[in-house]
Figure 1: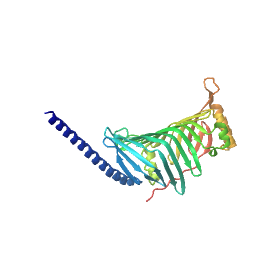
Figure 2: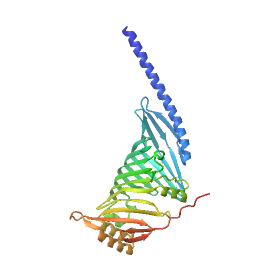
Figure 3: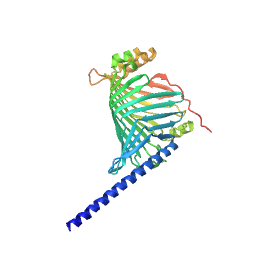
Figure 4: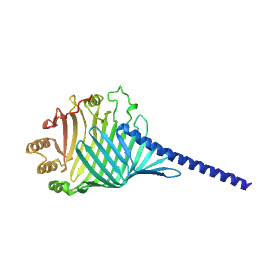
Length: 362
C-alpha cells in the first residue's frame, strides 16, 4: 500500500515537473517572439532597436534575458541619439509581473548627433542596475529608476573626464490617455526626471586654474528634479506643435537643483515656459552660500564682463544676509526671464537671443 502511494506521489511530482518545464520553455519562446515584435513596433516612434543576439535562462522561476551588444537609435526633430551598451540583462519574475529588473555594468558608447554637430562619449560603470515598473493607472504607466557606482566618463582625447563615486536616477512617464482633456493643464507632469550624484571628480585640464584653486576639482554633491508638463511631439517640431503645447499649459518645472562645490552651495527652483511669441519666459529663485567667492572666481576667469560684474555686486549687496549671525553669507536671488531679458530682481542683466522655430511644413 505504501509503495502504491509512493508511486502515485512520485508520478504526481514528475507530472508537475513536466508541466513547469514545458510552461517555462513556452513562456521563454513566447518572450523571444514578443521582444522581436516590440522592437519592430518601436520604429513607429522613430526608435530603432537591434542586437547581436540574446539568450534566456533562469529556469524554473525567473526569465533572465541577456541581450548582447544592443544598439538603440532614437531619432528626434533634427538629430539622433545612439546608445550602445555591452549588454543588458532583464529579469522578469512571475511574483512581480509588472516589474522588470535590469543590469548593465561595463562599457556604454553614446553618440549624439544634432544637425552637423556630433558629440560622443564612453561611459564605464562598475554597477549599473535598477527596475522598470509598468503600472497602467491614472498616476503613471512607466517608472524607471536605477543606481550606479564608480562611473567613468571618457571623452575623445580625455580619458576619465568625469569620475562619479555613486549616483541614482528616476524617470516617470505618465499616460495621457487617462488624463482629463478638458482640464486647464490636461497633461500635467507627463514626464519627470531626477538625478543625484556624489563625489564627482573632474579631470583637471577641463577646468581653468582659477576654478581649481578656488573650488578644487571635486564636486561634493549635485542633484536636480525636473518635470516636463504637457504633451509635445518632438518629431519634426514646429510652431504649431509648440503653440498647442503652450496653450495646454506646457512648461518645464525645475522642482529642485542643488550643487555643493567646495565652500559654495547653490539651491534653485523655478518654471520655464513659452510666451505668446514662443520665446522663453520663466521665474526662478536661487539661493547661494558664499556667492561673493563665486562672483570673484567668475570675474577672474573672464566669464563675467566688467559691466555685468558691477551689476552683480550691486544686486548681491542688497540680497545677501548672514545665516543667524554666523559668517556664512546667504544670497537669495530672484531671476526672471521675460521679453528676451534676464533680470535679477529689478536689475536688467542681459538680453537673450531670439529663437526662430521651424515653420509648419506642408
